[in-house]
Length: 107
Image (cartoon, rainbow, N blue to C red; front, side):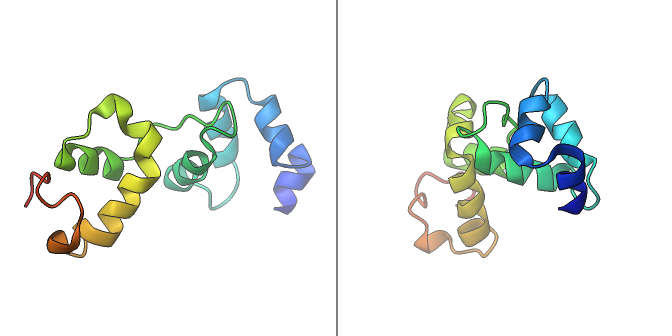
């Protein structure tokens, strides 16, 4: 946090000074302990709030979308929910409890 405050004064300025979504990702990854996965998660949650928060959908979200038959172009809107679905149901083998049970290709 100290490095962020020293270099940019805060997150809003970092976003404002970034020239594109890829530049924003690069700038965030300059901070120690903030790699590609952390940046993806952070920006995924800011999608729709920050104009340049446009990370590529995570591999987990893509796989979950394919598993339940969701069209890929619709995925960004539902990415957070897809990740939670994977973590709460798919990875724990709770297919019988999942609301997508009959739509799931793995079931």
